[in-house]
Length: 436
Image (cartoon, rainbow, N blue to C red; front, side):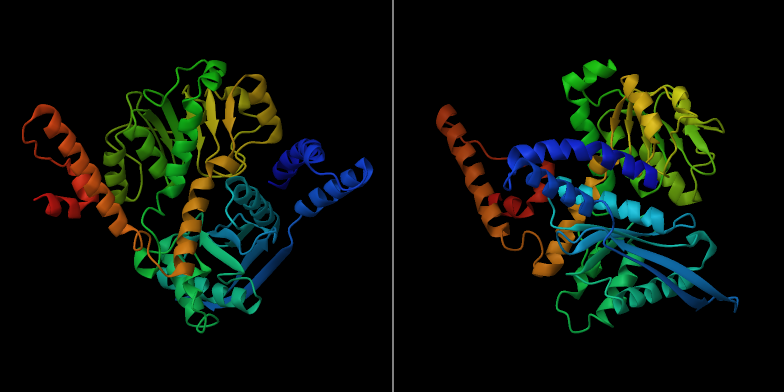
């Protein structure tokens, strides 16, 4: 992964130099260039990296040593922000690269975070829920002892293999140990359940962000002309690799707006249906069986759907799935990087020569960062969203409806009662009571 991140950084650095020289002048041209290149050199490496090892006693009685990592890429803005993943394949280099990508994503969407990333080298499927809790809580304590967690220092979040439950454990551990005297202790982690200070929509934010980013490109006639597609989401064929949190919600949003999700790939099976897969039926099936395998609404197949013809291919699972070895078999016209670093530099260059539109992970993954920022903000301000503005919004809506009613009655010289749509009534139940 490091070679991929360095490739894109080295490709972008000369462009940044040129643009900065146009806007920034500190003395002579040579002095300005020296300052800009020095700054780019500071941006590239990670500031702080820590490796933590600790023992746990498993339920079988065996004692096992667990290894975890945390990397803080940049402190140009604090706190740093990044997810915590559980994976057997991670190492220090992987965590460094992911932290670097997080910095660039935060900068791109202008949220006040530096980039960070953490991971514990385990396969969560091999541990009981109680063992995972012990690992998560102990790792949180170790991070706190080293100064690698805190609402104004380093804010964790969910990632591959982790979710609300793990974030709740982290929040509870920090609040009852190192953060016991900190009013803002809940803000040490995002992605919590709503009862623990989280926000509505956090779970689906990554998939929603991916969908809206892709839809923005699909609505652009110039981009669609290059890939020879009609603008818009409707009737586009989509194949998704990975049906975790990101893949599930991506499938839902694309299906809802008229696209056809014709293929879904997972570790144990792949599904294919040229007429489109019913996302709600598939979600119900996965909740019932724990797997997409043998889903009755599609063909269960062993073939590699990465190579099937489609309009949009979305890898949402692991890194480096598209390389120089298989890039010539890819038939998609648009590739959306749902996971980080899904293609090698050589594969990327080969796809560009074929006029394949590649939407990079640095943009696609911004949805979860945005929602994390709002959750952190809520925890720091100690005020729920809408608490200060609901009365103003209610009165504004009342005046708007009264204005519409008066205008219609004046024009037609007759009484015209207002009938609220069900969707508006769900969002503003106070208006229904006011009108009645």
